[in-house]
Length: 443
Image 1 (cartoon, rainbow, N blue to C red):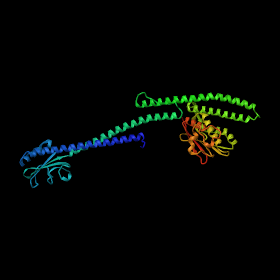
Image 2 (cartoon, one colour):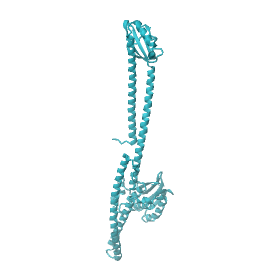
Image 3 (cartoon, rainbow, N blue to C red):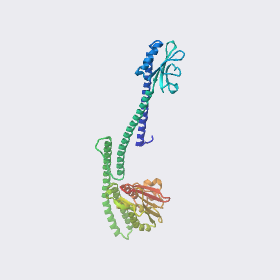
Image 4 (spheres, rainbow, N blue to C red):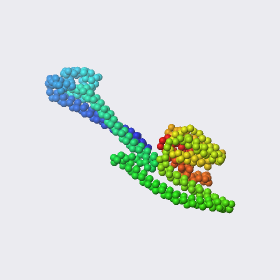
């Protein structure tokens, strides 16, 4: 079943109401018009009955004269024809004898002073014929007035329906936008954001209360997990630090012995574990959203220049060529140390995972909404179907299992980008990898 937007559903609803109103108004008009026609025929029949009861032709003619003088019959006309078709009574002159029974006529019938009407013709005694004619001009005027009233009523009803629907859409959209802003903020790491409530007890407030309760529960569970993980990390960090110090002391005493290389390897492994715990603690801190309180106005281009100056010697030592391009000034609001770490992680990843002689380009430019940061290398790249894997925590390619690192470098970068309300995307540089980061100017 195709998905429809709220606006589309509302348009279908308004269109259905419009069709129903058109049918209802049309039916009402048709019924009223038909009722008027029945009333006209009933009146013609009553008049014809009264005149017919007069009896002989002279009495019929006298009855017609009385009716024509009657004010209530001013819109009725009469005509009597003899057996030869000659009109012998009645002020209305007809070109020919109308057919028996009820019939309609218009200007083509040649009825003087009557543009449209209804005729009842009956056969009397001795072959004479009586025609009673109703002038329908007043009825037509009433029909036209009723038609205009129906149109005005339809317009006003649709105006009310459209206004009510628009107001309902606006209110629902406003509530949905508020919910969406909360969802976006929570996804960006602001786990304290909640949907505003008015206290009215309406369905919207009940929905917001249920959603906020769910977020509170999720936040409690995440805090429990985060604190448990941090406690484990802290508990392990101290023994690892003591182990590292002991290994360093043993290494100093075992210099020149056969155990020296093994002790050095153990010391290196311990340093990597300590780095891993430090990175995890930093990642948990970033994902908690607390670093957002340190946001300040800064220039991303200046940070990129500082990082370029600091890492150019590192790149040259490994045989890589680091290039900086972009605008001289890219204003942004963010956390300076985290953005510097983001730049360092991206460049070090390119240095670590590309062969010597690879060119690495860092570009920082302004975008319509904020800043665009691009890091491009000409190395082996990453297959498109594995882009999501390398961003995932501890996600590593099979080809880089032996390379140094823990697989959380891009995870940290992604967390920093989301904290700043931005997006991270990996693309094929043909050859190589292009990392594109979009960040809004204000968060």
